[in-house]
Length: 473
Image 1 (cartoon, rainbow, N blue to C red):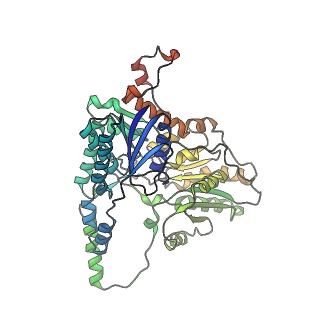
Image 2: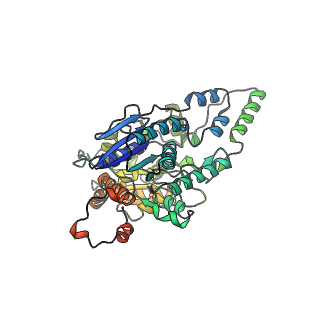
Image 3: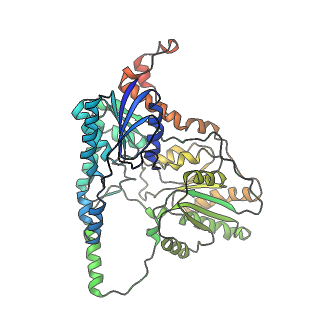
């Protein structure tokens, strides 16, 4: 039985995408290894895993006071690589004590937050233990970190990621573009340590059963998850202010934006249902009989209702777009499977350059039979979806293209012939158990002593061939 020490700020039963990935990776490893974990999660628990909690150390009080004093710029400059940097020291101390008490065969780290990966890399330097770092988001992905407080912070993030790559024995990414971008800037001796293991989906024993659609029901275009671009469309209520206050606000705004480094121009305004709502408006203009029969439903909003309502009124979308608050994950899945059409969007990249981000909900959408309208920019998400059945691609701001995709789908659904697509093969490929098995293969490559005995049928396969075999699709 092998012995693994895991380090992750996030941990089950939390529902962050990273915590979910930690769940199925460590659950799988715990079947054949002794697994200990260092985490900050308050109620961390996972069957078969020994938890060592180092309490959360976020700089919330500091950042809160900086905001009150209108000095948020200082907290942005000082807190690097993330607000959880204060956790690094105590977590490293705890992890080092655990190594001294019982030396593991390997360390596995999960990020972001990146502070957990820093703990693991420092522990590797102190102990010489093999290290695997899983990065759900690259610190230099321009879609995730489009702006930095200063050019120095952008350089520091790149230097940190290169340090991870040159310290770890294996680097695991979820995005092919991000993996290749980072790998291509490494010395040759480190290029073989990169692995692509995409996010997985924890499938239920049965597909969510949904009730039959009634002929009078409106067509439901459903988005599940948060949308971040509301304030880009929001017009703040006008209030009278003295010339001095107006001048001070301008100075404060310039101070907060002084020195910022833009890694990639993004258009956050497209990360809303505004453009798909406008596409539905076009359909209703072309087909007046569809008025009231096509709706956009958003589940998972975290923004103030007054902001959302103001934006919908601004574009006259109140009768088309309905926005709901957070929902339990199981309910979100049920809504997803009950939808007539699924909608996916990301912030656009106005310069047309390809990005490295891929939305986690991409994989969950692909486990349904529903048509998917994917309004995504060039890059990883587009490349991954381009050959998938039942996916209709457009740019996030291309209202005309969205309307063209939606028109036949809506017409078929209203005619009681809702389009469905067979994605059985994808449900098999996307299972979280397969992703966990791929991660276990990486661990076996890093620490061959932990690999299971080779069966006679595979004895003829050379180690070089095994290393050349991709671990995921």
